[in-house]
Image (cartoon, rainbow, N blue to C red; front, side):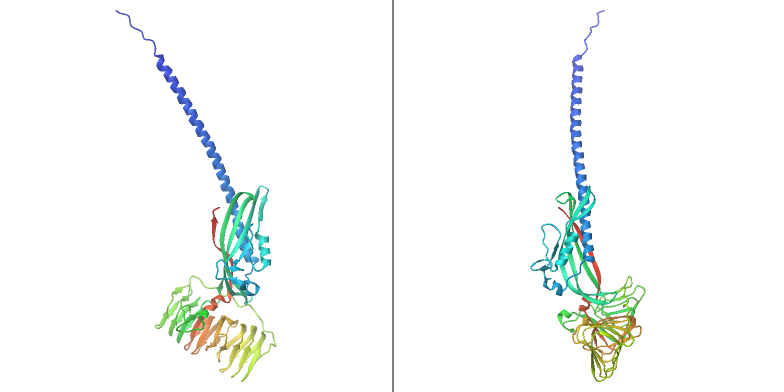
Length: 464
């Protein structure tokens, strides 16, 4: 037999495998190095981004503090100017409103300029809202600076519901620009800016032609509509509107021939009972909740207060405190402008009560103007406001000069006759008989407003 042939091991293939493993290891280490470096950079970027976000969020809260401080300042330390104190020079046709051909502005930010008629308010705003520090400690500190620009100005008359004394003011809308810095304002770690719109407003006490707190009863032949005094006197052809609305926290009944050029609202627990001959041009709605009517503040008529009972003559009175005004046949009591406190007023069939300027009457126990009614030659219901605190029935007769606003939250108010009433009437209950026509003046919507303080309408975080 022949001997087997022996072959040496293949050392060449083994050496190749060792080279491949080395190359693979080096590639793996290189890839891991790249990934580690990328991871380090990613973490560093995330840390920087997180820090920037954190500081910008803290700056945002600082800017928001500036907005809240501005709202507080406007509520507590600011009263809108009226014509006598500089607002008469406003150009309200512009937006923003202008004064001396520039926007009305309070400036609390560096590089901005104040433009406001009253320097006392300029100083007060700057002290409260220019570069104000918020500091917890040396490591946690912010600074806010605020500008405010007047966007809208509407003159109005407000009424203090604790005294029922009216005062001139305005409804205003301001744009508040607040910038917040986290850290030193010169070299901040974060910056944020908020733009907010704030506004004060007022709810008109006399916002409808007729308000019967407990009920409204429309009998006879009744017309209720509105007119705009800015367009002149009421005119059925050229100046008649459809804002002659009727409302009640309770029920409304209309059993006569009734035309209401406006809306009709009845209370959440009340009802609406229309007769066959009623027309309502607006909407009929049930209120979700009762409307609040503030009580007339208590007042007293001292014993010995003067009484007047003119007959066939005219007596002229100045503002003050009076007992009974008993206007006899062909008698007239003429009131000079101002505020009067009176125990009772009564008119005979041909007696008249006449005003000569802006007049407010507080009547304590009796109110009967069913004679010749009221003479208001000014032709503006807001020039005569009557607050009746009594509980006995209040009676009124209309006429060509019967312009008035009447508030009698504890009494039955009765409008009688075949004449016109211009203005607004509020009573505990309200009854209309005969063929009265009630024309609501849109001027009442800007008179005797119950003030609502400045509040934020909208806000936006601005991108820097």
